[in-house]
Image (cartoon, rainbow, N blue to C red; front, side, top):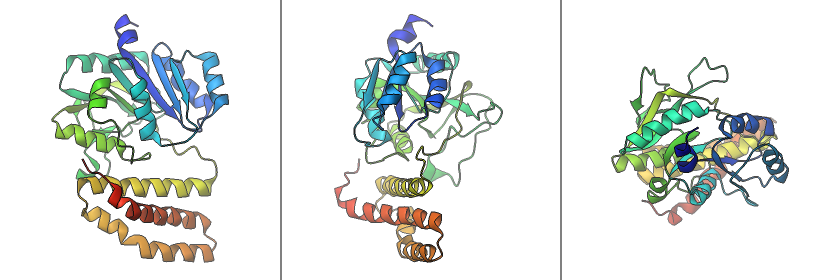
Length: 294
């Protein structure tokens, strides 16, 4: 690996209740780079295990989980390199593929983000990496790539950018706990007429993992709560009167009755899912006056 990579690129990863075996696979591929890890789960045992086997430039344990958006912002402020690769702990990418991304972004001054093309764990099936902004598509369709392509948005599991660009645009909006912050960042990038490029020749493995919470009822509640809230906030930033917001808010009464019915019928998984949606809507309605749109 050239000194240019060593001096100018840092990889940042945010973890929460992460399995060491999965994180090991990710870190083993990138061990020659400068790495910053933010642990929102305050897992000292995981930190000790990682540092036994890998040289980590900065490993921060957060006593409170403020969300992935805040975690990535935290590591960006710690980054001393010109370029920053934001990665999820379940993204596996080699030095060769990172070098393809790096070579592209240093030669394209108008490119804000470059992302790889992702595949499943068997390296056979292409998975979703980028495409249109969510408000401009009916469903996520995997691009049929034969070469590099400019996209409206890319998912945040692996994105390479200039650290100063990321900081100057305002980082991730920390009102997003986990979902939609990548879409929001890409929407702001589009407004300043910078490009987001998905590279065909740069490849990674990413299977879009689930929340690491073991209790299935807690997982359902947390997922629905955060997804619904973040989605409401995303569309609120586009337009406080957006039709998507109205559609979700209209569900409050019916969701409440479904929740009661599922409790009576002892369908607890459905009940916890409904409870997450209800709580998200109530939380959103109570916070609307606090939002500062930009």
